[in-house]
Amino acid sequence: MAIRFLDERLSTLQTDSNGTDLITSTPLLIGDIGLQVVAAQLVPEHINSVIVSLVGMVGVVAIEGININITISIERNGADTFGSGTVIFQQVFNSQGISAYGAFPIVAGDFPPAEAVLAGQIRYTMFVSVSNTTQTLAGPVTFNGIASTGTTT
Image (cartoon, rainbow, N blue to C red; front, top):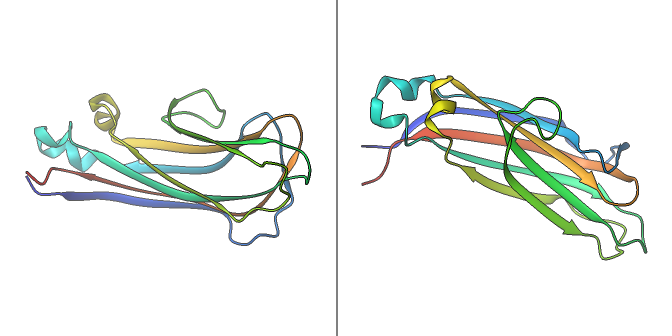
């Protein structure tokens, strides 16, 4: 069965590094996409072979001299609040007391279960939070996803 493209979406919160939004220990929604996968339902074996590729970047400015953890999480089929979906990716970056960062690259994948595919759309949300203090979401912030189905064998 050949690989079949299903959908591609992108979410761009910020295109430069001039952001001033604050990040706290409460996860902040920074990316939101809904991938249409209803076409996978047309071929029964495609329902169980959907794959999702997710990429993005998050630019954060930390306070110099303070060691903090910056957590980036991606959920499947959640709402606007962290913890309402299934976490499929979570990465913790430690600032090591350094004040400025380039954007953190995010690369994740998902093999959604059949019930998510049968719903016709799979929502992915990306959140950021920090430990012990408040930091600045400087940017850029982007979140992109591609859904396909099939196998190469």
